[in-house]
Length: 211
Image (cartoon, rainbow, N blue to C red):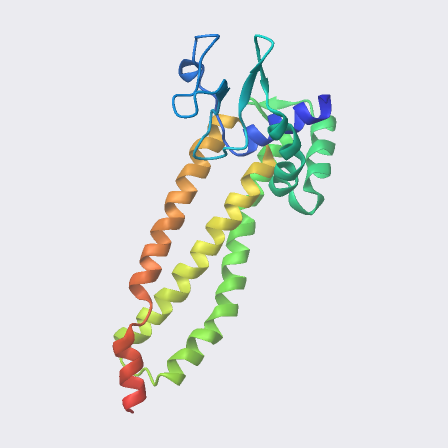
């Protein structure tokens, strides 16, 4: 049970689930306004699996939450990264501004990794873009640039999702994760909208078929 409690704490911190004490009901006999049951879900939109129930006049994490912890933990730390995080955590004591040395190293390496991935993905997609331009006989410079921007926005969207996966692994302070992940998800949606505006429309396809 102690191990599950540690894993739940890491899940909350990694996902940026900050529990605001001001929002917690003060009434010991509080009831959910919709279900009228003695349950409280602190993150109903982000993760409805995490909730507490009243048992013997005490509020405890529900049995459903306890059963879901291993699955949530494995999704947050895929490919065995949990063992790496715990190994670093057990062997690091020095901190700077409340952040461990290995976490600072991870923060410094993250943009380098994303930069390398950008060029790797870009060069992987670039031949596809050229193939599409050749297939649709795109000769207009504006249309060629539109396809290139499509490639770039798709690459940036993929990098944002990679960052969303990697940041929780660093186990940074929950407040940092909350703002960082929220900002990255907004950025991801912006790239999706820009990608939608840049995808060649039916006019381009029709013009290619007419040729």
